[in-house]
Structure formats: structure tokens, C-alpha cells
Amino acid sequence: MLTCEALIQDAEARIGGDSPKLDAELLLSHVSGLSRTSFRAWPEREITAEQAEQFFVLVAERVEGKPIAYLLGQQEFWSLPLRVSTSTLIPRPDTECLVEAALSLELPESAKVLDLGSGTGAIALALASEKPEWQITATDRIAEAVELARENSQNLNLPVSVIQSHWFEELPAGAFDLLISNPPYIPASDRHLSEGDVRFEPASALVAGNDGLDDIRLLVTQGLGWLNAGGWMMLEHGYDQGDAVRDLFTQAGWRNIETRKDYGGNDRMTLARKPASD
Ligand code: GLN
Image (tube, rainbow, N blue to C red; front, side, top):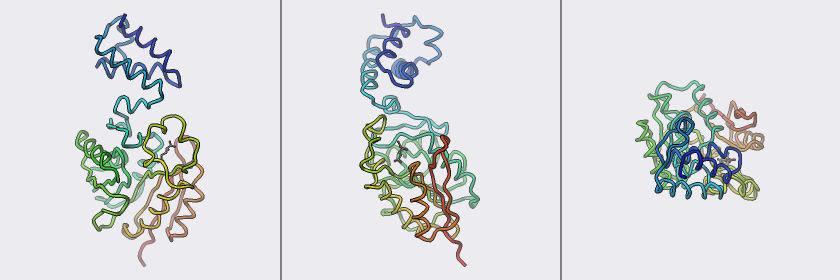
């Protein structure tokens, strides 16, 4: 009765959504320790009643809409397996385009980089995996997120210094070559907040005032004080916020302001440079 095949078929029918079979397989693999390919090779294999019990609980939560990443406690970002928890946003593939853009900048050999509102540590750790010589700091306002980012840093053996700070507030004085952030940027009234995965994610990581720009405004204004001359800031934002974010950078006196698209072809980030001292 508790064969892998029967369990997967039953869960698949109940989960629905975009990828019910994949979800069912991931959850079964999680509780059983068996690989997804083994379910195809040995569909008649049985799992223990205890494992089945855990599986049914997870499937019920998935039916309620809880994101698969929270149920597994893990999400891959830049090919790094990151632990996730409900204290942070689940890292999105679109955010990988910030990592790619950061790696393409001309920066000093041992660049000083700050990832603001780092959550799981995704951006900072991805950069650390590519640039071992960079000195990378990550901040988050939420204590649980700081713990999680430190844990990910240790598990992956990628050194990142993680500091609990609301944006720049608790940061020791210093100057960076790159400030990078995926801040909250969703307007408080946005209807997407009541749909899909974001329903289960912390508002602190998603919502930023009535126009979604409260935190971006702060970062653009205060960021200049934390950069070396010629240093860069790179911010993720909503697909319809490119004009507004470029305006904010322009008003604050930044140069080389440019919006770039994500892998889905939507405006997703804007970068800008602090003027070189003359
Ligand atoms: N891109 C995320 C979403 O729309 C939001 C991320 C964020 O607010 N930083 O689901």
C-alpha cells in the first residue's frame, strides 16, 4: 500500500498547481532519503509507516499552498544548496541576474562588497563562491535571518561576515566598492501579496510602503556615504519600477545609471556609480 508509486500518484492528484508530480517526488525523497530517480527505477519499493506519516503532513501543507522550499527547508541559488526558513524570502532565480551583473563589473582584486538585507545570504554567498578574494559582508535586520546566513556560510565553507543591522544603522564605519541588495519592493496594497508563495513569506522581506520604494529610497540616499569614489550600487526592483528607481538615483547625484532585465525579459535591477572624486 505504501509503495512509492502509489504515494506519488495520490499526492500528485491532491497537490495540483504547476508541478504536482515534481513536488510529490521532492517531498517523498525528503522524508525517505531515496532519490527521485529511484522512484522510477523501483516504483514498488515501500517506505515505512512513519515516513509515510511525515509525507502526508507535508503533502497537506503543500495542498494549502506552503512553498516547496519551506517544506524541504532548502532552495538552490547559483547552484548552491541554501537552507531557508520562514524568517526569510525564498531566493529567486531572477536574483541570479544581479550576481551575474556584479561579476561583470570592473572591481578591485580584493573588492569590499556589502549585501544589504541578505536573508539566507544568497547574493553574498554566490559572490563568495565566484570571488574568494573579495571581502564580503552581509547584513539583515532579522536575527533569525542572520543566524541562517551564518549557517549557510559555514555549511558551504564560503566566508562572509554577517552583521545584524537595519540597512546601514549598526554597520561599523567603512567604505565599500559595491553595495548590492534585493530589498523589499512590493507596494503594501499589491494584490500579488495574497497569491502564491509570497503569502507564506515574511512581509518584512517583501513590503516597502505605499509605492514599494521606501527602502530603495533609503538605500539610494544613504548608499553614497558608504562607497569609495567610483564604487557601484546595484538594486533589484519590481518590473514596473525602473523609471522611478532611475529618477531616485539621478536626484541623489549618481552616475552611469542603467536598468537591466531579468531572464524573463522584465526590468529587474538598476545599477549606478558614485562619481569619481575630481
Ligand atoms: N521578486 C519577489 C516577488 O515578486 C519580491 C522580492 C522582493 O520584494 N524583494 O515575488
